[in-house]
Image (cartoon, rainbow, N blue to C red; front, side, top):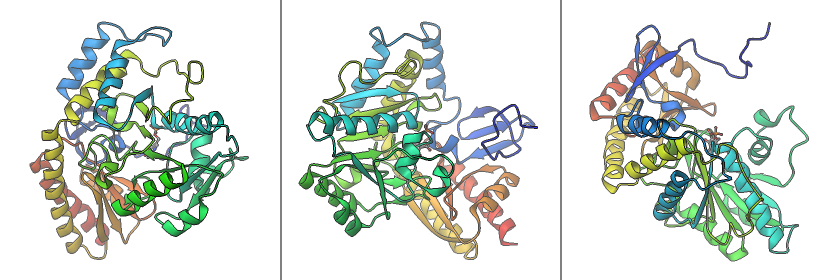
Length: 390
Ligand SMILES: Cc1ncc(COP(=O)(O)O)c(C=O)c1O
């Protein structure tokens, strides 16, 4: 008999009832060191006191207001997003997938209004992940996600990840945009080099193509900059964000330049919940905390410490791990064993990690993880690797 919850997930047999910073506490009282953070969501840890206070205060005032009216909390969040990024404007969503959908619509509308509606092809990359809607699975195009859900939404073409020659050859007068994650998350923590990202920007400029970045996973301080593309010294035309921006409350956004967003006039897009006061109050608080240079400096310091310890872990288990990759606290251990085995061994050692692709163990701790917790994480990962090592 089918479970009452639609069985679309392979769940571990653990349920959590509480969280404290980097720790998730299960219903049986076991404390797990959380290096998954809800897949890069709990950027400021569980039950962060500042976020709890912000959410509670807002909950006591007003929860939901329709976008038929002005929403000051939404305007405040948009102000902060514009102040700290390339963007001139932001649309607030409830998730990364919704942000992907709007980004795709925005690209199409831009070329429609430019009098070039046949210019609708969006170039994406193998290993990409942009969500699970019909548009987002068509964009990523992986067999695993699209099988059985055809016919797919047309207008996407996937290229090999990081293959600049393939990209140059693929851009034509039908190319509307190039869309990519600066560091592929679900694809296995695979960063694009700064040089390649800068070259893609240049290619887009030369051909008038829009550059759409998906920073749903890599954004909000995760890589040590507020957004990962800053390392390459470039800016996109459109950017999707989600996950960390809400610190655990469902929230996302599409950020855009005035030019890229020019077609999105009143009536072209909308959402009942997108931009609600509860989510936006929390998002504005997260932005205030994460965008502070001292906060990002700490992320970088801790990331260097963690990486150094992980290099030691890899050296100690050459049959289990290949190497460390990623940036900041968006780290991946390329594995020589199935990463799922390590995730399971991690449960036995009371540490939470996440598998990515078929060869990577993802480590995405809260950005507030302490030095002691980093040391403890490596001890537990060492023991988990020992279990797999035999
Ligand atoms: C890069 C990227 N884009 C989009 C999404 C989809 O976001 P959501 O699950 O919030 O819809 C994800 C989620 O993992 C992601 O990692």
